[in-house]
Image (cartoon, rainbow, N blue to C red; front, top):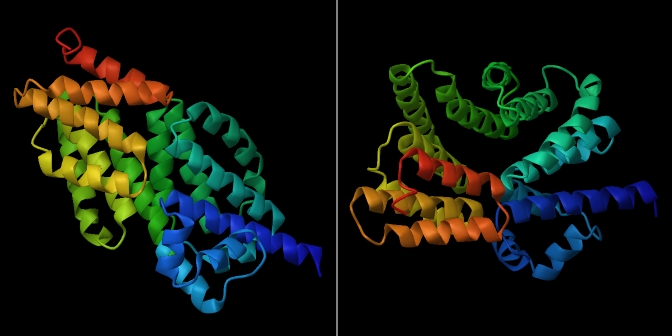
Length: 305
């Protein structure tokens, strides 16, 4: 049997497995949703079989990916390598491992000359580049490149639309940091929330992105506007973050729930803050842990706490 053919099956299987895990699905749950046995899913993910056309369609719908685009990439090695590095880059971002993200971006940047402009690959590159600027706290360049990426017109596809949602989410999360004074800061923050809430209406069938949009809104409301009327957002986020096994988001929302309880003068607020900080510390999520300690200090709660 052709070795390249076998290699492609394995790469495709790993790609499906990666996106399944990213969506917080076990093999058993995923098999049930696709309508085949867990053994069949295992065979696909381990490169023993290609999925049928019907199964591929179901996988595309469930994981919001395009297997056809991915198979096409296998025949274009630089672009295939770029996509592999890009998926790994997103994984590090979700884990808040910004040290590995910065190092990995150096490899992604080496492939820039192989990426054709006006393609989904270039849009992805601009998104990764924007994140790299953000990690380095260069908000201006981050915002400018997100605008370039968002305004890059491509043929309509589910993949491009999904990426535009992610770009818009990051842009509106970053834009308040560009404000020059307190009044402008609040004005831009409110505008960003308005844009994010408007998009939420379009995301009814995508609960994972809904979770990310709600999380961004919660952060802006509490940290930028000192608005603690967010009980419904907190409740929805706790459910969604558990569903998708995003424990980093779950425990950060627990932290915000503690702030909400403190605002409501509930004496048990410190239980939530304790639980959140302890989990972030034990899981070595230093980025969020340091951020939360600094935030408690900024609002003069750390002395009370």
